[in-house]
Amino acid sequence: MAQKKTLWSLYLILILVFLNSCNNGYDGSMFGSVLAFDEFKTYFGLPEDGSGWLTGQLASIINVGNIVGGFITTWIVDFRGRRFALVIGSLVIIIGCIIQGTTTGNDQLIVGRFIVGVGLPITVSAAPIYVAEFSPRELRGTLVGLYNCFWFFGSFASRVTVSALVNYTGELKWRLPLFLQMTPSVIVVLTIFLLPESPRYMIMQGRTEEAAATLAKYHADGDVNAEVVKTQVAEIQQAILDEAALRPDSVMSSIRGYIKLFTNMSSLYRLFLAWLIAWYPGISIISYYLVAMLDGAGITDASTQLGIAVGLDVASFIAACLGSLFLVETLGRRRMAQIATFITVISMIIIGVCSRATQNDDGTAVSNKTATIFAVLAIYLANVGFAATWTPLQALYPTEIFSFSLRAKAAGITNVFWGTSGFLFNSVNPTGLQALHWKYYFVQFAWNFLWVLFVYFLMVETKGRSLEQLEKVFTSKNPVKMSLEPIEPEVAEPETKA
Image (cartoon, rainbow, N blue to C red):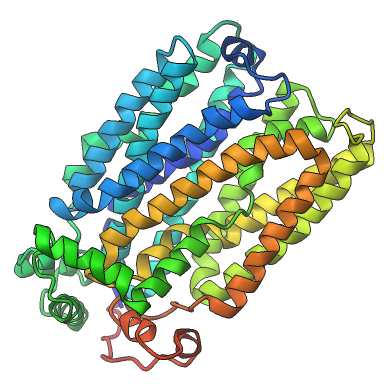
C-alpha cells in the first residue's frame, strides 16, 4: 500500500496530466454550444436547427483527425516516453486551434479541426498510460477514472465561456471559444517536463535505479528498500522480460508487437474489448447535438439552452468524480458497465416518447410542457448515469487490459476506434435527427441495447489485479470466468506507516 504522505505529491503531479482530458470535453461541448449562436450558423451557412449533413461534417472532421493521429500515436508514445508524447500532441492541438480560430470559411475551419483531431489521440493515449503506470495498484482504477472526469471540466469550461459571450454580437462570439480550446495544451507544454517519467517506461529503457527511486518517492516515503517498491519493480521487470521487449522503440520490435497484436487470440480479444468501449453509442447524440435535441423538445431560447447545458456539465462532473472515487474499485468494471448500458437504454426510451409528444411526424414543434420537462430530466439522467459509470471506464479499461509492450500500440489502435466511432456518430446523428426526428431515439435505443448483451457476456473484470497479473487472466481459457474468481495475492505488501 502506498504511503499517505507521498500520495499527495502523486496527486499534485497527476492533476497536470489530467488537463489532457479537458481538450476532448471542451471540443464536444464547445461545438455543440456555438451551434446555438445564429452568428455562427449564418457565417458557415448551417441550418437554423443545427442539424443536417454540413453540421455533421464540421463536427466529425475532428474524428477523421483522430483516426490519422491514432496511427502515429504508438511510435510517439514509445519513442521518447510519455511526457514527450504529451508535448508533441499538445503542440499539434495548439496549431490546430490557431488555424480554426482565424478561419475565414468552412475549408479553414475543417483544416483546423482536423489538425486538432490529429493531436488529441496522442495526448489522450499518453496521459492515461502515464497515470496507470504511475498509480499504486489499489488506486489505479480511481486515478485513471478521475483523469477521464476532467472531460466534464473541459466541457464545463467551454459552456461557461460560451455563456459569457451569449449577449455579444459579431465574430468574437464564436471565435474566442475556438481559440481558447488550446488553453490546457499550453499549460501542459509549459509544465510537463517538471514531472517525472513513467517508472515502467524507465525500466523498459534500462533505467531501473531511477525508476525505483521515483516509485519510492511517490509510493513509499522515499524508501527504496520498501517491499512495495521492490514488488513493483520485480513485476515490471518480469513482464518486460517475458515479452522480450526491452527496447520496444526499435523498428523490428515495433513490427513484432503489431504482429502479436493482430495474430494472438488473447490480444484480439482485448482489441475487441477496446472496440466495445470506444464504439458504445451511449450519450454521443447528447454531447454534440444537445441544441438540436432541445429544439425538438420545444426549448429554443439560446440562454435557456446554455443554462441547461452548464447545469448538465456540473452534474456530470460531480457524478463522474463520485463514480471514480467510490464505484470503480467497489463495484468493479463489469458492474459499472452494466449499470451504464441499462441507464442509457431507459433514457433513450423516455427521450423518444417525450420527443414524440413535442413533435409532429415532420419535426414541427408541438407545445407540451410536461413532455418537455420529462425530456430534459431524461437527458440529465442519461448524462449523469453515463458520467458516474461509463466515463471512468473509458480511459481506464483500454489502458489496463493490454500487456506492457503492447500498451502504447493498443492505445493507438483504440484511438482509431474512437475516431471511427466519433466520425460515424457525428455524421449519422444529425442526419438521423433531421430525417427521422423523434423516431431516431428508438434507433439509439436499439443500438445501445446491443451493448447490454456485449457487456454481460464478454466483458472481463479487471478490478484488484496489477497490470501484470491481468496478463494471466487474458491468456486463460475463459477470461470472463477467471476474472470473476477471487484474487490470490502474489506478494503481501507491508502495512501503511502511521
